[in-house]
Every structure is written in C-alpha cells, then in structure tokens.
Length: 127
Image (tube, rainbow, N blue to C red):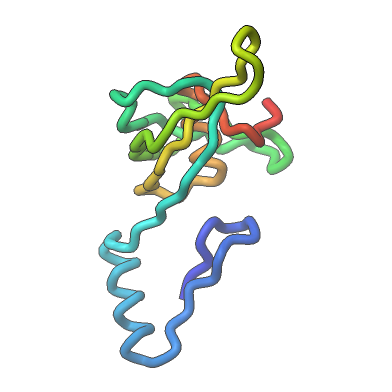
C-alpha cells in the first residue's frame, strides 16, 4: 500500500485483507494516518516548543543535506517534550531531550531538518 519514510528503510504498510487494505488506503488518502516517533536530541528543549512549520528544501543532489529554506516544500512537525536527560559529571554534564514527534507531511529528513532548525539536532545528526 505505502512505504513509510521513503526512500529509507522505513516500514512497508500492507493490508492483509481487502477490507484492511481499503481502510488503510482511506486513512492515507484523507491524511488520517499518523506517523509518530520518539527522538533523542541535543540540549534541553523548552516545553513550549510544540510545533515547527518550516519549508524543507529539496536539495538538487541527493547526496546533499536538506535544510530549511524559503524555496522548500511546506512541512509541519508537532512536538511534545517527553523528558530531559543528563549524562556526566555535574561540571560538564551532557544535556539531552526526548521528544514525541508527529509529522503531518512526509518530507525527506523532515525530523532532522526541523529539529536542527529549532536548535535541538538529533543526537545522530552529524551536522
């Protein structure tokens, strides 16, 4: 029916019956299908950070990183701060946040781009 997180190794959404297939197809077509994630990011994010609406730039070369840019496609990410985490000695403590994220648009690298845009890149983002 659909591959979530195209073209990464995301889940493949399948219907095992005709009824299941058409129910999923309806949810997908009417944008009722929800994609939710838990993400570990750098820094202590404020609880007030609940939404990022920024255009994700489509880089001309697939090897280039995506970024927020006025020429990009509209993208919307909803965030809910789940927890703060700290590691290390008191003097040089490493601070992180765990955020529950729901994406309403499925742009490539949207979560990484949006979190980097608001100053809390994912811990696995090399940039």
